[in-house]
Structure formats: structure tokens, C-alpha cells
Length: 503
Picture 1 (cartoon, rainbow, N blue to C red):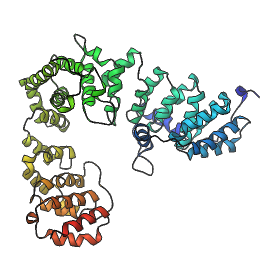
Picture 2: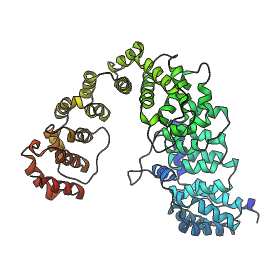
Picture 3: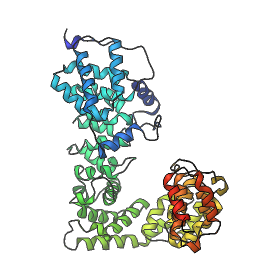
Picture 4: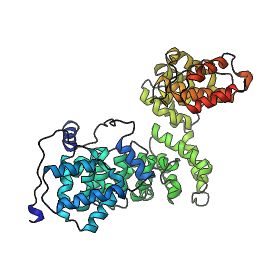
């Protein structure tokens, strides 16, 4: 029987397959990006875990790969029935696709497993899989044996971020298809896909990388170096004039490269000094907007710092860049744009003005307080307050007035912390700074000491431990003694013991 005459049985109609879900998302939301789906049964999604593993902790598992490769090979030597295929699906679903993918492919090559039949098994798993592992293994098999006929299937499933990595690998070096997929995803999927576009000579893709293709929902730095090198950032900025999309994209790339992070940065980019200088030149020729002002201020701070020392500066180039950035950020029209943003009623405009105002060292406490009163649980606003030691008294008063302190006295729990923009998180932010301000904010500390989250209690004990004994309120000691027996966290309990020994 020829491989081309081989036909696999189809399961009964089942809307729970990944492909059916992808089709439904496409009907509702178009080709992508699609809305995020919360992780099932955990705080961290499979897409996030694969992203972390591929960039930080890759570990192969040949022990799981061998039996699965053997099962796949055996099924290609005969006509499998639906029971065989279901068993393959369930076996594939039980392994970690990231840790076994390479080993499975190597094993199948060694066995000379017929590629056309491997492709059909891959398509069957990808098309009819109801569990992520099985669908991912199907995509892995298509990466070994698939061809252009599988493009639509790969793009459709790859638009689901939890499968993008495997679809991108299956697409191989087909840059046009990878480009199509990259535009459909925004998180780890964007990172996985764009990194596979490195070195492309396609001018459409290169232009897209510079104008926003590097942006993602995880960390722009993961793609900034790829965009700068593959996109030809230095050459693009060498032009006499550039469009605003390129200017803003270049600013985002340079800003990401200049920040500390886990990926390649400005020290890995020899053209960095020249690109910074040319960016500032073009920024001075375009109308000031909040984002560009913030980028310019951030670049000035970077160039002034010791982190810029290792860069290959040409003679006096660093001095020119410093002078240029300082001149731009001192322009009255630039500062007027920031001031207007701070005075805006629109919270989104105000939020966009905060970083430029900080970079330009503008005082905006009055405007910040106004916004905090309107949005008392917005953690981003509180960060600007708590990091200003001159405003600690104001910060403590605001937190005491705006946070529901009595509701936050819930007794100890085991949750490490809570999500963003919750009163517990704001309490955490403020109390975490009180170790540097002895005697201030005891009502906040006492609340945190009796809050459900481990981090709030830990920050409360840390603050008291940093204070001189004479500044600790008398009522703190019995409160700590009463809290100690019920404290479920071993580290917090140990710190309580150490603090009580000072009494």
C-alpha cells in the first residue's frame, strides 16, 4: 500500500478540539491577535512556561521521547484504526512537548520512518487533538515532514499563543509565513516567531521590525536586538529624514536595549552609539510628543550612567549625545507638552506624562495626588509617590485616608501576594518603603502585620526590624507576640522571633 493511499479514520464530530476552538475565535475576532484565555488549573499558562524554558531553562527528556517515537514509527508500518490513533493522542498529551520534540525527531530520522505517513499522523493530531500536548506533538511532526499544504493549519493553530512556538518551528525558514504568524500574536508567540525572522532580507519584514514588530506583551528587550540588527536600524536612522513610525519604533528599540534585562542589550549592538545620536537628531526635527520626550529623557539618563561606559563611543561622541539630549529636554515646548499631559483630565494621558515628567525632573506632586484620589488602587500612581523620599509624610497620610485599613485586617494566610491594582498591593508598596523612615506609618504597618498576604506581613516585620528600638510603638510588641503562634510562613515567623528578642 502506497503512503499516498493511506487514509486515517476521522473521529466523530467534536467541538472540543483545539482546531475547532481556533476556528471559533477566528469567526469572532478575525485572523488575530485573539483575546487571552486564562490558564487552566494554574497561575502560569503553558505559553509562558514554554517561553521561560526556551529562554532560560531548556531541558531535553529522551526517556519520554523514545517510547512515543517508537509508537509513531509502529503506526506508520500498518493501517492504524481509531483506537490506535486515540492511544497515540493520549500518549502524546502526557509528555512535555518542548522537552521531547528534538529527541522524537532524531529518533524518527534514525528509524527511517516514512515521512508521508509521519505527516499524516501529525495532521491528525493537530486537527483532532483535544489536549495541548497532543496538538503540539502533531505540529512537531509537521515540522519534520510537512510542506506548503499545511500552511493554513499551522497559521490557524499557531495564532493560539500556547501553540505558536510549535507552529513557528514547523514553518521553518519560510519567512513570509512566519511574518504572517508574527502579526497574529503579541506575547511569547510574537517572541518565538520574530526570533526566527532574524537575518531575513525581506524589506517588508525589516521595515515592520523597526516600526513595531519588536513590541510584545512580555518584554520588548527580547526582540529589540533582533529588530535593530535584522531591521538595519543604524542604516535607517542614517537617512536625512525619516517617518514618524520609524522614529517611534527606533525610540522603543533603543530604550529596550538600554534597559537591564535578560536578553541581548545595547552592549551587544556595536552601532548603538551612532543609532542613539541619530535618533536624537531626528527627534529634534519632529514635533514633541510624550513618548518621544520620555525616550529622550531615558536615553540621557543612560548615557550619563556608568552602564554606557563600555560602549564603543567615537571621540567626543558621548559628549555630543549628552549635550543634544539635554538641549532637547530643556526646550520650553517639550516641557509644555509634559505639563499639559500632567494637567489632563484623561487618566491615560496623565499616565503617559508621568515618565517624561520624572525624566525631566519636573515636580508634579499636586497632579499626582489628584489622580491618586480619583484612582486610589492604581499601583502605578503609588510607585511615583513611594519612590520620592521627600513625600513620605504625604504618602502615609494618603494611604491611611484612601485604603480600607479595617477591611485589610483579615488574619494571616498563605497567599504570597495579590494582583495589580488591589488595596492589598498598594499597602504592600507603601509599607515596603517604611523601613527607611523610622516611626512613620505605624497604622499601615499594623494593618500589614495582620493582612492575609505573606508579603504584607513580611514587609511589616522588615520595617519594624529596621527601626531603632525606641521608635517602635509600645503596642507593636504584644501585637507581634499575638500574631506569632498563628503565622503560617516559616520565614516571617523566624523574623518575628528575631524582632521580639530585641524587646
